[in-house]
Image: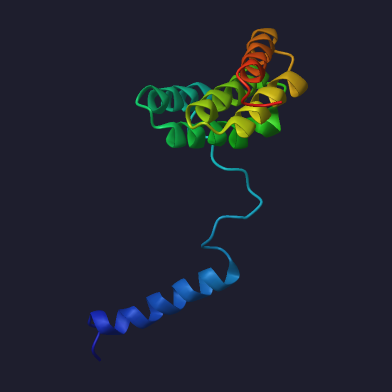
Amino acid sequence: MHTGPGRLRVPLLLSFLLLVSLGLGAPKKDAPPPKSRTPRELAEAAQSFYEFREYGRALREYQALIETYAAEREKFETDLAWAYYEMGFCHLQLRQYPKAAEAFRKVIADFSVLAARTLAEQRLDDMKTRGWIK
């Protein structure tokens, strides 16, 4: 009886197909994303991208922070508020004024972090003064 590599491929392939069909080989769709990076690490990565004028990449990092930690809002409120605030700045740099205003308004309406709220209000006033938003 021949037990070379060709004969092992079929059982391995069948095993793989069985696992995939049963959903055992795939992550659960409603499972939260792994928290492999802390809010601080995500924010630092975003800030680095911002400093190198890679605003789209910075936005993705801030969005990852928000999506990863939004379910624990009370624990991470400060991180989330500043992520939205900084997203507003990224949108300003990209001249996406309505999106910037939306991010700043979210900070004001949804968070109690006084410093972030105050600065968001100032940015909105400045945007209005410049005629970028109404």
